Length: 370
Image 1 (cartoon, rainbow, N blue to C red):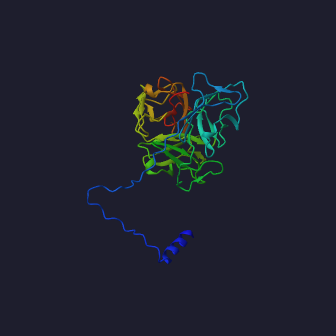
Image 2: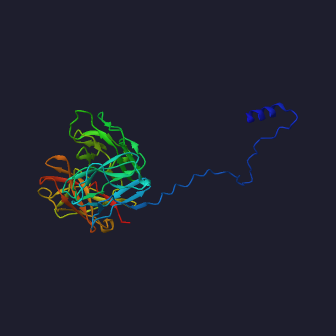
Image 3: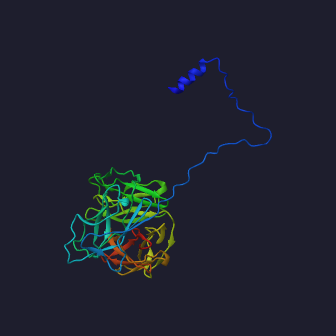
């Protein structure tokens, strides 16, 4: 209103001289005129990494000789690491038992279910991370000996929502919808999804990724499904494939778009062409391993050396992981793999003696302990 009033007053007055608003002619003296150059704000400085030793609930402790339970947060990427000891003499672990509570800065935006390794051979466990920071034991051996946090990684902020193919649906409720977050060259998944009722096809297309998030070779992950492990793969056409009818989790699936450094294979290990070449890369302080391998002759065996990391990429303490496995053409299998400070990646436990190939795409850990 004030602008209109002032304009009206200027137009109605005939006594005041009208100021000359004509722009001056450009100077022909060669002297440049003064111009204001628009500036762009400086890029946001990344937040310093957050390192935290996790406080375990009563009756639990760090497993001697293994990585201590810890948290690493880089910007919005949260990685849990370490191995928790459960004394068999203590009361058994039951569904709903809290293992630890994360610092508030690292709380996720929804419930995220993960598939993790235990000390009970090739038996895996389901561990959920909740929006209040509690890390909860949901299903698995009641006396696991140890429970690994290895492989638990998520993005604090929701990523790009993923479209579900073949009429699949998000489980919903407190669980995250299917999403993928891109952090520089690191892709991090989340979500809990359900195939349409009656679907039992093998390797059915399920979730499609944008071109910017497609890896350079197939990836195969062991993920959580109801009371078991499941295979989730990214094939060359960047479409997720899934075997089975139960709800399954995309949480815990993370991979680098960086080519990485080739690993030295074990003496009886060979690259399996169904997956990527065995390689290692890193996202700041997070080390990520990829690759699919088979035995050069015969089936895979427990204790087999799969590959060796370069020493500058090896962990400073032993880690254990749940990884995807093909046994007797059953892709919904999981194995336990141990990674040692000398860089050796060893197949520690198998569910069967007729296993054809193993993927190490679930291996990711913090380079150092803090």
